[in-house]
Length: 578
Image (cartoon, rainbow, N blue to C red; front, side, top):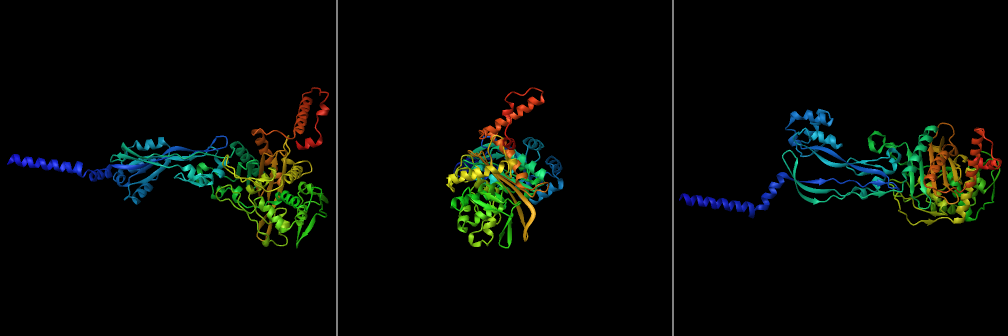
């Protein structure tokens, strides 16, 4: 009986073991896994952002985030002061955060810290405290390119700028794996790879970080010297429409976003609407030439320095008398532009400016880009067309102005601006190439002696440009505050760059665009032409200037001048260009 009883017990035990380990294995394995097997994410890095030459503009670096299981950590109350000190947190704040989540199993304590700092915290072996790998975004160029790139949030998702526009491309896909954790949350075994992590893809921008930094530096100098409240500069590649540089001031540090005011985050070059002022005059002239209303030899009597515009007046800064079409641009005559616009119908003028992109977004794809304000002719008053001819009564962004000027320099071919290297949309022919070349030659006189922007001249290169000085609108009219513009193209023979500089509200010295903005254009373009190895198109002036400099050096050193030194001295016009 005893043996039989023991035998039956053995059979029962074997049957139960068979049931647990073979027949009903899945249920109990699931219950066991629920207690010690966890599926955890595998962090993945965000794709790098590079400039057009492969230099890094935004990179992701591995960091650690400290987290805790409140249910376990609150049982070790005596260790909380030590943990708070290690985290650099207030002790009461730590206790309050844990108490509020006492029913949870996960809470972040400190995110995105140096791996060495995380290692020191984990070395304390405080129950319920663990770490996990994350990635943090860093911007090597800092504030110089902050408005173009934007920034990411603490979860590494794009919030502004190109980080937001290309977030899906850059973000990548996190992976997942199953692990066995011990009671303190430490991983003791990797069980299975559920899903491999896919890192984000690289993004090569059209931006050239060298030109970007140069534009940032020169614009900052101008803002400081003029006491201006803000400023913007845009540089485009004329042949492709690619954005080579875009800077704004004030700016912010994308590596420490919280330290700057929210207003500094705005990319003014694509979001701020400004009345373009006299930068509209070359387009007004081009519209008149296309319509056959004027020719290059047409004459305009601007005496006595003003003409009527309804109950208002259109005035010039001086009485220029009789000007030809080139003179209207060279002297920046409001009256001359108004007289040209009078020869055009509303429909002609409206259609022409819309072809150049005014009144709609450029299509650059930048988040929050403004379309500008350009009312349709049915909303024009009797004075609107005349004021539009010299840049009032409509609004545009600096990027729109740069795009329109690039079309003038590209034989009337309008490219959609792009921030991505090699991404080119099909261009549109918006102006006859002969008319575009004719207007370009007229604009060249602006930077030559007698023009309004001699400070934009670059030795060795012909520069085409236009100054602009617009009064800022205020309640009930216009204030005595100004925006100084310079928009230009270089070199004239085959334009490579289109650049617009806008200095907002200068308070020290002059406020004219030819004084406050033209030097920024000159300094940036001198560097860009050199870096891009663009051949001079005014070699005679450059050689004459070199000969004159050599002659001065020899004279200062007491050496006799060469026999041909007199012939080497440049003509007055060449010296003026210098």
